[in-house]
Length: 195
Image (cartoon, rainbow, N blue to C red; front, side, top):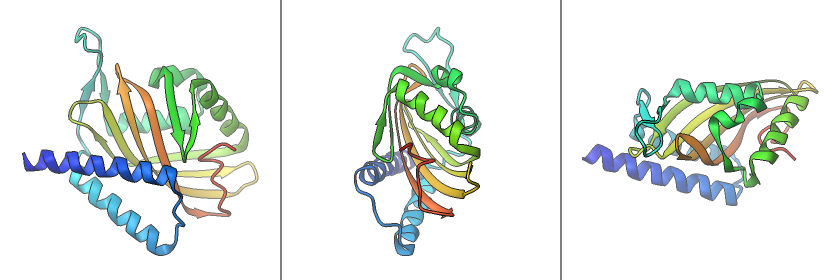
């Protein structure tokens, strides 16, 4: 019971961090980075869902269910961010999805344009899922991941990203993330948020 309550509070806390950071951009001083990293570590440890498998699907349980695991999220980022496979978009998102990245809002059509923009402006993007959590009712996913990118000009960037998704029938209906530059040749977050 205590573990379950702790997880629920940790996820609520994580959601609020994302909402706050999407609305207010904190200057990423070394002190803020340290505080932010410490909070994320505490949240990730309290969630303790590294190997958790959650089955999500329609309310009609005859429908084949999606298995959300850390490896599923790794494949999601591979298809959507690293390879920018526009044709796989509907495998992961609902048609009426809303995607918010660093406060910028996209619908399905504009996010596909963003994927094409990324393909045109990057040499490579690699994503490493650091940790992953699914709510007990299987309707929300939260993860922390690191993105390593090199743009067409050869500028290297390493960013830390926290994201939360709300699911409907096993697909993402609402996706939000906040991105923090860890290393980079500049402070341009365009790779994370298309201009």
